[in-house]
Length: 121
Image (cartoon, rainbow, N blue to C red; front, side, top):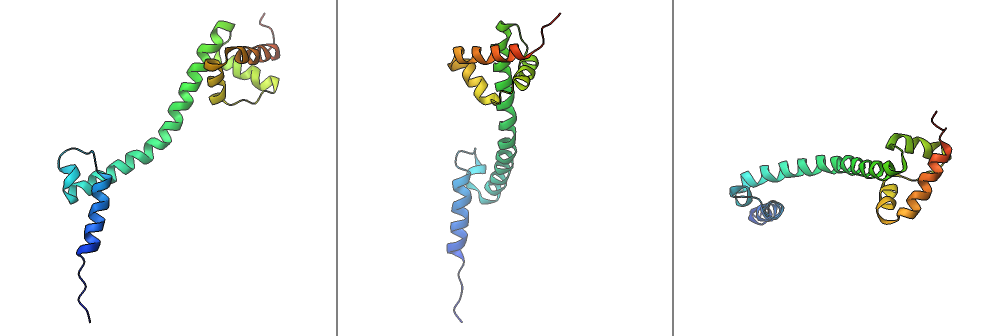
């Protein structure tokens, strides 16, 4: 039976790890044991932060919408309530983009939301 030498597969595995740790500092980049740990930790952070990114962007959109509706005498929560009562289904991402890029269109949406809200006494 032929002798199996495993240098090729080991080298390929190591190359994959070193490619993933490119840009890491010191031995985290070029020593296989430490690089492997560094790569695994980086992947954990990446997985976690893909989830956190969604939260962060939603919070940003809400802040932008809130800032955009204040000049119309509304708060964010009253504005969203007005949209729901008016039957307008536009998501927060689009609302935030409209507030920045298309102030006229955003104003029309705000007026619809205000019309759907009961008048304050």
